[in-house]
Length: 421
Image 1 (cartoon, rainbow, N blue to C red):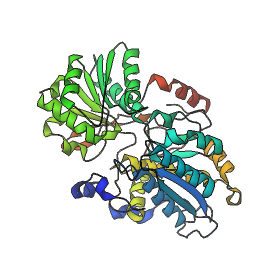
Image 2 (cartoon, one colour):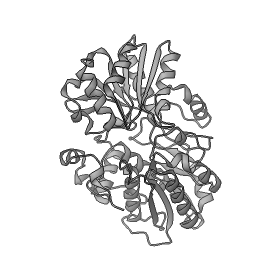
Image 3 (tube, one colour):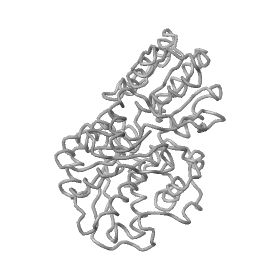
Image 4 (cartoon, helix red, strand yellow):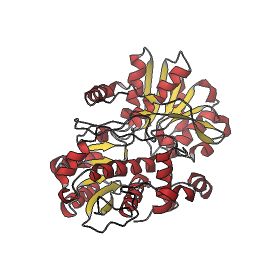
């Protein structure tokens, strides 16, 4: 499968701005980093992404593939190459289940890595649990992705994303008490993506209102005016860029830019978002980042960009989601390298992945882990950016640990494995 650039939504200028220098590829660190191609018996790993359908939601899977290709060129898993098979679910739950069955039963995959889908989590929970196979996904969006023993993501998810951005604003602007959150009416996404921020502000003595809308018939002016009737201090536009831009346009048309502080989750951390709204919003929209800046010059981030420069197509976005896929593949690789290559099977890989109780990277704000808990949401600490000068500018010292009430059990589990956040 090839990346379909027509669906990415990046123009040539935006792509050029996102691409890393080929100098990044000079000294890549992948697996054994020995420069020798792996030639042994392949280890099958699968991935489920959404390529065809309403949008191309797959950069995490292609980034995972790039990293595995780099691993295979550098000794593989102690001599054994990774055979990475990626399937397209087409945004269809039935297709997602067929893909999972093919990868697990026919291809005998030992794990799934780099998944990026709105439907995979809900459609395949029972399949993953029955096979006792771990999915180390790059990007999870619906609630289902964060409430399974066999599914873990390297991204934070929209609920965490909204919560920590609101927390940042409440600290920056003392006195914030009223919050409105817009979200598309998608099952297990809409209200749930807002509920963490809603719960947090209520826990701190404030009030909140969630406004869900039909993504197929958005009346941006009506929902903006409904929000203003609540007299909010902060408004979150918790939606993909394509749905968010008309809402910002409607608010500007109504003269409401300065009537509240505006924010959005990581779905707006996209280099094409600031140019899509007018310059009037400069310095007035805060956007969450689930991982550190895509432009960071830190070692791991430079390695990610170098891997993509050498092993991925130029039009694969260098964005948060491809960072997430790279991290999912790297975590899995490092776990596999600690195993006896002759004894790698699904059961042993599942055990090895659940044994990952601390993974550190400069791409995360805090230690990440898998563990053997009943559910997973290990990434809940991240930075925040500001729309400024037509770009998303990361804010210094802005790594926020989400205090979403729904994470109470996650925080408690972390204490049992020695993770302090």
